[in-house]
Image (tube, rainbow, N blue to C red; front, side, top):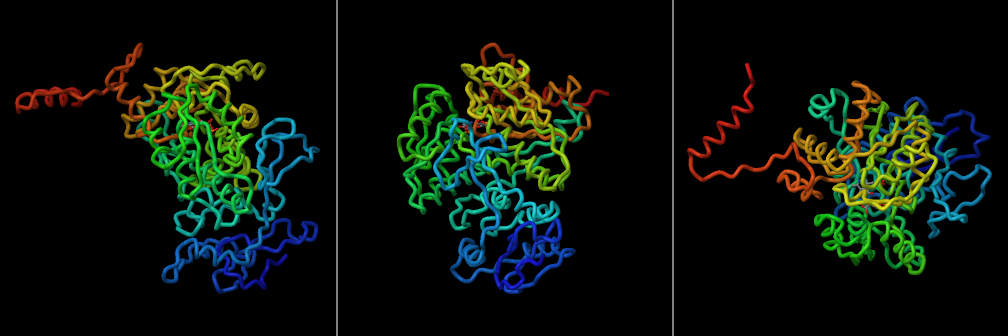
Length: 530
Ligand SMILES: Cc1ncc(COP(=O)(O)O)c(C=O)c1O
Ligand SMILES: N[C@@H](CCOP(=O)(O)O)C(=O)O
């Protein structure tokens, strides 16, 4: 089946085909035509992937005064969307015919259950896994709008129908996958341990991945004159930071509900600085979540928490990115800290789509790591998935996951059951020691990553995770957002905690002799013992 060879489109590395119905397709897997700017060259099946990569690499030249958006607009003029997505009830019976357009404002199914974004997998399958791998790879490291983003480089799998012009992006994603060589060898006897630093991002957490998608869709809804005046969320700090930044970039009002005195100063200042309407409420995250759900059903405020399944479409790209960074080799384990539990499902979904669409042949086992002070999923797992009870979440240094009644509990259970997953927990002392250990090897992680590292430590000790298993720990936020916890730890200022890895500064008199004395003592303690 020939692709649209007659097009003189200047589409740059877009899947660009005029589909006939699947029954008329001769080849089970069709290859794309890649049309380079003004060359109108058709590729045949054997050269298509190369052509894709070359087209992507073609330099974008700007006419004077134009920008990357203008350039994308020129390339997209004749783009007709071949892929689509819709909301369906989460994990519904295949016979269920309930669905909603993504342009509708809906967060729950008729029965009150969660929704999921369902892609037209049959349309995506018109391209083989090699095509998708090559297309995604070709977009990394470019400034082409919007594909320079790690999320939008997978646009066809995220929000296929949105106009690139409506996208609000900070070129998020493409985060560092760090080989934790010293940490792995010194503390875990592992040589293939990796940390996916999702917190090295625009607002300092993985929330940017989902928020670019959600705010872009809101931008579109506003243009479609849908009743949206602002966008709101409940937050333990990171969702609100991402929401307010993306809304500010798009000129959309944002409203954030924060539990008073339960988030870090660095997180609190982000929405304030970005001009959000900030409500500090005398309750916990679960209380804020309940309130925002009630408010968004009464007022024209669009809900930005991960109850809204749009968010997870962006977050799932971190999983695809991990595979891409390993040159499409599948790791054995991926460990994710869990709170409201959207992200663990997002990872599962990203990996599962890659398998379903032939980019890889298996998916990793997932581990969800919770703070013992906020562990409803862990307790549920330990009960053999028999008895879910929301808990009252206690204070934890992993404050962004201090959540007792996670909205995505069903999504998390589904994900874990379908990948032979595991749930682990970390006490306050365990997570703080793990964070200090990791930092002592050159990282600067957040306490939530300390929770994930504790889970890894326990699974290594019990032999569940093997010495040479390729393992990825997902670091969800930047350590700089949580400096107070590190200060408390290193000043041994935490009640009932030994802080055994504390490294407090040494006060010394301002004279040469005193400085020499402390330095000699230090060097002796570090010198090799012969
Ligand atoms: C830094 C950080 N890590 C982990 C999580 C947990 O993600 P999820 O709520 O999707 O389980 C959150 C938010 O909840 C977070 O802000
Ligand atoms: N950690 C989150 C809690 C809310 O989670 P969400 O993914 O449902 O928005 C935060 O930073 O607010």
